[in-house]
Image 1 (cartoon, rainbow, N blue to C red):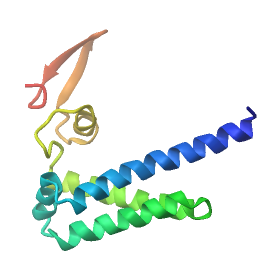
Image 2 (tube, helix red, strand yellow):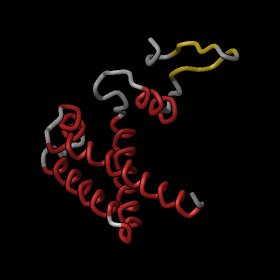
Image 3 (tube, rainbow, N blue to C red):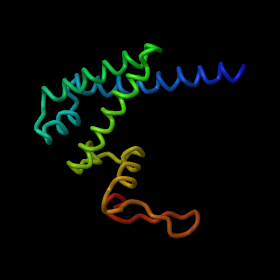
Length: 134
């Protein structure tokens, strides 16, 4: 395989992965998943805001899947993700479903202003500290 083919496969692969993530997120919003409803209730945009964001996510998917429009989909997706990050930081909702998954752990460690989580004190040994490790 040539380098050009590898780059094309990487391009298609990343667009498909991003579309899948946005598709899952839009499905959760359209199906009234409790976590989606809860977050939008917290910011006072329940129902209309949730459906509006889900429609924007569907538009993002369509734009990402059309090669000549992919850059527009990437920009719209970036704006949507920036909005989601800001809302989660403002509402201090990092663990919405009260489960402890790796993605939520990373969100807490890298964006929580109190700096709680796992801290490495000795090489190869992590100690629990703060509310997240309790």
